[in-house]
Length: 424
Ligand code: CAO
Image 1: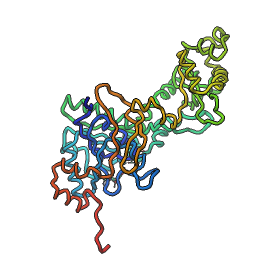
Image 2: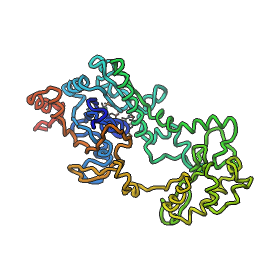
Image 3: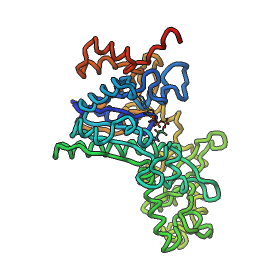
Image 4: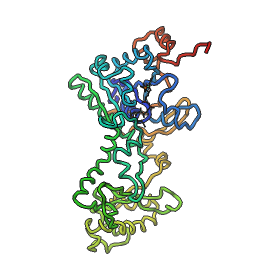
């Protein structure tokens, strides 16, 4: 079995998280991803949140699998010459620098098209065109400006960011789809194009159901939100809904046995209408099956706090896994709150390659999240991230540079940090 993107060459000018997420996905599918890093410095995340001194951080290693690293100083004339050769050599250029950074280097879209009209030029920026287009953006800024934070958390608490990196990794995923779409378009037309994803747009796309609710507000209260049952009126904007379900089937996070000591002894419980009778049997309320106050979804909506309170009395008598087993037998949708420790140790996730163990020359063995997208006819293996500049010479040779030229490029600081003069 081959790899789906074998033969696709990516000039990876990404750093931190959003761009690297995108190029890592493409690399997992077999693209040759050549990561350009500044000599002596590299992607800033190599040195961020380091758990082992002087070893590439997990932040870096977990976002840069299957890539090759070449060090090039793009502000060095010879360095820019190498970059231009890379533009001719590659199919896709991916970058997520601050707005204007690539233009300042001289790699404008016009220049890129001159060098390689088939090039797909993909960028992540914080915002699209508009008042904030020039702003630098990190994950939580995107969560706040994309509608996620204002709709996450409890109604009587402050806006909340989520631990899932929907701004960075979420936008990286969007960009990867944009790139393969543009590659398909290029197969049909022979032409490259620009692909841009704004983090604000990516988060808003993921918060789409809350924009749905914003429009529903004009026509009455959001009856599936707990505050409706509590008699609290809605304001002008979608409120935070705690752990209420975002869909049409009411759900809640409920305590399970051991919750007093274990912060993750909880289960998400959904009162899906078709299994309501089974729920009544399990929690010991068979009378609710025919009772006018509980029998229909509409009758239950104003009583969600009471109903989930009663269900929680039952879940608190079971561990989250016992509850899961009992509920699954009756097809009741539910899910235990799994800690990162439990996920790291989960044998089924190991078996599918969603959690993988990777060996690294300076770090040793570590766990990573593998490719979550499984293709039936293409393999995808997780290989360790490169050391800074590990493949510099290898890539330069592929670009046609001779050994003498490679040495000279190093000497003039195009691919390595310039040695300071002895007198200094
Ligand atoms: N050689 C020489 N210079 C290089 C280089 C190389 N190989 N690679 C990068 N640089 C330079 C760039 O040319 C730029 O210099 P100028 O400002 O002089 O033009 C500078 O390094 C890097 O630019 P930056 O402004 O992008 O970096 P930053 O750390 O200040 O900002 C970030 C980081 C993420 C806020 C910004 O890049 C950004 O807003 N990116 C777009 C949105 C994004 O992807 N955010 C997600 C980040 S993940 O949380």
